Image 1 (spheres, rainbow, N blue to C red):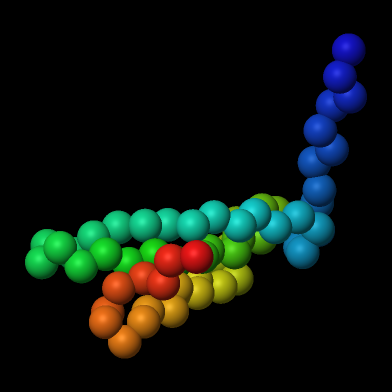
Image 2: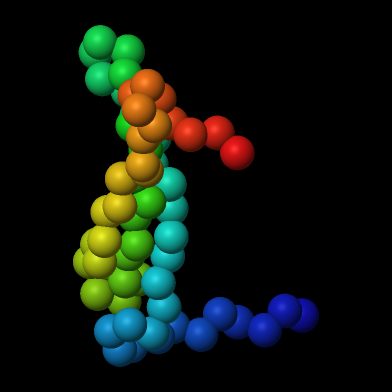
Length: 60
Protein backbone atom coordinates (compact mmCIF):
# COMPACT_ATOMS: atom_id res chain seq x y z
CA UNK A 1 0.00 0.00 0.00
CA UNK A 2 1.46 3.42 -0.95
CA UNK A 3 2.25 5.92 1.78
CA UNK A 4 -0.21 8.83 2.07
CA UNK A 5 0.84 12.26 0.81
CA UNK A 6 1.65 14.59 3.70
CA UNK A 7 -0.27 17.87 3.77
CA UNK A 8 1.91 20.85 4.62
CA UNK A 9 0.51 23.58 6.87
CA UNK A 10 3.06 26.40 6.58
CA UNK A 11 3.90 28.85 3.82
CA UNK A 12 6.79 28.01 1.48
CA UNK A 13 6.62 24.33 2.40
CA UNK A 14 5.73 23.25 -1.17
CA UNK A 15 5.70 25.09 -4.49
CA UNK A 16 4.34 24.16 -7.90
CA UNK A 17 5.77 25.23 -11.25
CA UNK A 18 3.70 25.35 -14.43
CA UNK A 19 4.05 26.80 -17.91
CA UNK A 20 0.94 28.59 -19.19
CA UNK A 21 0.61 29.16 -22.93
CA UNK A 22 -2.02 31.19 -24.78
CA UNK A 23 -2.51 33.26 -27.88
CA UNK A 24 -3.79 36.76 -28.66
CA UNK A 25 -6.56 37.33 -31.22
CA UNK A 26 -3.93 38.53 -33.72
CA UNK A 27 -2.18 35.13 -33.54
CA UNK A 28 0.84 36.10 -31.41
CA UNK A 29 1.45 33.59 -28.66
CA UNK A 30 2.93 33.98 -25.21
CA UNK A 31 4.10 31.70 -22.43
CA UNK A 32 4.63 32.28 -18.70
CA UNK A 33 6.29 30.21 -15.98
CA UNK A 34 4.02 30.44 -12.91
CA UNK A 35 5.37 29.63 -9.45
CA UNK A 36 2.66 28.99 -6.85
CA UNK A 37 2.85 28.41 -3.09
CA UNK A 38 0.57 25.37 -2.69
CA UNK A 39 -0.28 26.06 0.96
CA UNK A 40 -1.08 29.77 0.65
CA UNK A 41 -2.49 29.33 -2.89
CA UNK A 42 -0.60 32.44 -3.89
CA UNK A 43 1.22 33.10 -7.14
CA UNK A 44 4.80 33.96 -6.15
CA UNK A 45 5.97 34.78 -9.67
CA UNK A 46 4.74 34.88 -13.27
CA UNK A 47 7.83 35.01 -15.47
CA UNK A 48 7.36 35.62 -19.22
CA UNK A 49 9.46 33.60 -21.62
CA UNK A 50 12.08 35.78 -23.34
CA UNK A 51 11.48 36.54 -27.02
CA UNK A 52 14.01 36.74 -29.81
CA UNK A 53 14.36 39.88 -31.96
CA UNK A 54 11.99 38.38 -34.52
CA UNK A 55 9.22 38.36 -31.90
CA UNK A 56 9.04 34.56 -31.74
CA UNK A 57 9.92 32.25 -28.88
CA UNK A 58 13.48 30.92 -28.94
CA UNK A 59 13.64 27.21 -29.70
CA UNK A 60 16.28 24.90 -28.23
